[in-house]
Every structure is written in C-alpha cells, then in structure tokens.
Image (cartoon, rainbow over all chains, first blue to last red; front, side):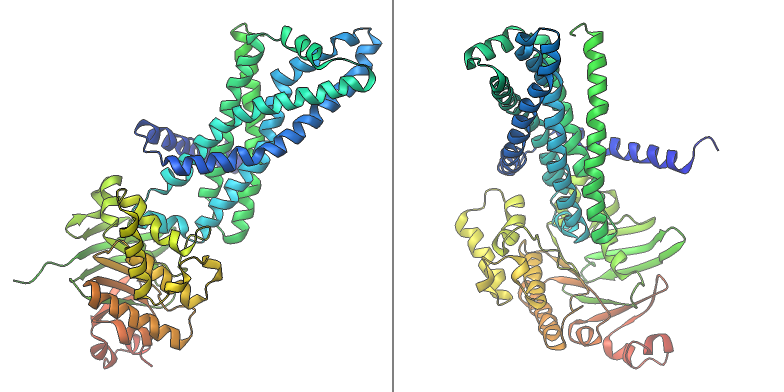
Amino acid sequence: MFFSSSHQQFLKETGSISRFAGKFFSLGIKPRLDFKEFLVQCYFIGYRSLPLVGLTGFIMGLVLTMQLRPSLVLYGVESQLPVMVGIAIVREIGPVITALIFAGKIASSMGAELGSMKVTEQIDAMEVSGINPFRYLVYIRILASTLMLPILTILGDAISLFGAYIGVNINSVTSLNLFFTQVFRNLSMGDVVPALIKTFFFGFAIGLIGCYKGFNSNKGTRGVGSAANSAVVLSSVLIFVIDLLAVQITDLLGLN
Amino acid sequence: MMESPVIIIEHLYKQFGDNIVLSDFSLSLKKEENLVVLGKSGSGKSVLVKCVVGLIRPDRGSIHILGKDLLGLEEDELNQLRTKLGFLFQSNALYDSMTIRENLEFPLLKHHVKISEAEMEARVMEVLENVGLEHTIDMMPSELSGGMAKRIALARAMILRPDIIFYDEPTSGLDPVTSREIASLILQMKEKYHTSSIIISHDMACVKITADRIVLLLEGKCYAQGTYAELEQSKDEKIRQFFI
C-alpha cells in the first residue's frame, strides 16, 4: 500500500481539523458573539497569561544579551548589541517564545477543560438544551486566543527588551534612553509588521488545536490527559510550521 | 378526537461498526404519558434516547417530535425545538464550573435574552422548590450528594418548562430511598407541568412507580409493550426475567 495506516491517520486528522476550522469560519459569517463570555475568556486567556509571558520574556532578553556579548566583543562590535538583540527579539524570538509559552498554558488548559466537559456529558447537556456548544465554547475561545496572543507578544517584546537593557548594563553602563533609541532606530516596519501578523496565526492555531483536541476527547479521564498533552505538542509544532511559512512569504514579498 | 402523539419513531436503525444497536425500532409517545423504555444494560436504551434528541444521528428511520421531522431540521430549528425538550442525564452533567444558580440560569439567559432579573430569580426558585433544594442555590455541583445532584439536574431539565422530558437512568447509582424520591418527583413533574416523558430504566421499583406504559427493548427491537401489570403477568421468559 502507498499509504500506511499512520499516513491515513495523519490525513484523517488533518481533514478533521480542517473541518473544525471550517466550522469556525462558517460561524464567523453570522456571528452572534456572547460578548460577556468573550471578555471572560480574554481575561483568562490573555491577562492571566501575562505574568508567565512577562517573566519568560524578561529572562530571555537578559540571557540572549549575555550570550551574544562575548561574540560581539570578539569582533569589536559590542556597541551593536542593542541593535542585534532588538531585531532578534522583535522579529523572531519574541513571537515564537511567547507563542510556545502561550501554547503550553492555553492549549493544554483548553484541551483539558473541554475534554473534561466532553467526557462528563456537559457538552451534550448544552446541546440538548438548544445551546450551540461550538459557538459558546469553541468559537469564543479561538477568537480570544487569536486576539490575545498579538497583544501578549507586544507586551512580551517590551519586557524582553527591558531584560536586554539590564543585560547590557551588567558589563557596561548604557542609559535606558540610549538603549531604546538604538533599538528602535534600527527597526523598520518590515521587522515589526510581519512578526505581528504571524502572531495572529499562532494564536488561531493554538486556540483551534486546544479546542479541537478537547472537543473530540474520548476514552474517559485518560482521554482528557491525552487531549491536553496532544494539544500542546501539535500546537507547538504548528507554531514552527507557520513560522517557516511566514519567513518564506516575507522573503517572497521582499520584506526581509 | 384522539390527540396525535408527541413523539413518533418509525423503523429506526443504528449500527456502530458491526454492532447493531437499533433495528427497525418504532414507538410513539402520547401527550402527558410516562413511557418507560426497559431493557438490559447495553441494549441500546441510551442510544435510542440520544437519537431522539438529535445527539446521535440514526442510520435510517424517522423521528417526529411535536409534529416536526427531527432529521430534516436545520441547526437553528433543531435548537428551537430542543427548548421544548428536557433531558436528565445519567451522569447529571451539571456544569461543574458554575454554581447551582448559574447552572439553572444558563439555559434561561441563552434562550430568553430579555428576561428580567426578578423573573429569572422566580423561575430558578420555582424549580428549586419543586425538588426541595432551595438552600443549595449558591453551592457548587461538587458539594452535592448523588441524590441532590440528580434533583438539581432534574430542576435544570425543567427550567425551560419543556413539553417532553427524557430521563436517562434517573435512579442509577442511588440508594432505594432516594430512588423512590426521584421516581415520585418524576410523577410530580408530570402532574404539575403536564409533561410527556420517556424514561430509560432497568430499575423495576422506579418503573413500577413512574410507568403509564412500558416498551421492552430487546436486540434492538421493540419486543413487547403494555402496562406494568400486563407485562408482569406475561408468560414469556424474556419478559418475565425483568419482573423476578
């Protein structure tokens, strides 16, 4: 056989996720958003993720600066440290690391929460009382995830740059004003806009996979654990795939 | 003139892989009738009731509820129809992240967007009084005993004042005293709200209290039907085994 059973399983899963995404977009055509629940989800998905994103962003900025310094010193371009760190954080490291942290926290939480609701028949209960569970549970979560990740990335980048500023000041003295002037003078729209646009796709993929895995969970409590786990794994892989595609597209458009 | 049945199921088939669960199954439910579907564990009783509310799509056959062809309805029409149906799940299926008040308010808020605070409070208190659990209003489902959770699930099933209620094993996992209380509540709901009900059960004490008519589901088919007294006197071994 040309297709092994694992290939077939992969294709089946891909088809199933595509249908799930299609359902999301079909609801988007005639949106009836429960705005209160949307705000609740934005709070849990966005605001509650901020401390974790901020902490990892700060450490990442600090460590990146400390790791880069010796190489730049070797070539005598230590003064370019803020520029290099700024471009690395804004273009690549900030969006990807924030998305990975977000996937670990949000995709697993969505997978476990919806999976648990599925196995305890709470989703069925919603459906038989005439409430569309996809609209109420899935649509809102994916939308919140898509909108919150770009905001978190902007905040994460800012905190990360502050971490880099601290890192620069470990071995030399640079004012905050000078550091950020150097960073922003060398950043162009071509650095910022594509990086920001791809975070919408990261957020969508994380929300989609977290909800898909939870909504299709079965086999009892083991299924819930498996849903949470596979939601993180698959959404993390998707982040890198989307990142790869984004770089190619940015290249083709001449924005690099 | 005789009123037409509120539910008509005709020639229903459902198969999972090689396992035929329902095979040419038919039944009808009259207005204000308590119909018990009796059968062994794994005989397809729950599958039947989930087909009737549209949670599982049957392979063949037709289901008419309150004059509407269930299988031909658009999603919005189906959701509209479902507001006239109540469902008591075997597992209760209470929303475990919401308080009892929120569990009861949730369907009201979704279907009666313009309902006033006072009216909502009155509806919530009414169903809680029906099941005698007013004091649990601010508790979480995890704080309730099995019997209390079942009563709250029944209260939630009644909150939209449905015409038809489906009870999936309403007494499973409960002690005999609580089981009798739940069975009595089922009768009270029928008397107070004039509902029609399909009750899935193999608890004969509950069946005896609640059933106006019994349908025996065997090997995916309607094997026999009649009142409790009629079936109890049957000489057929397959029927008698339930009454011993």
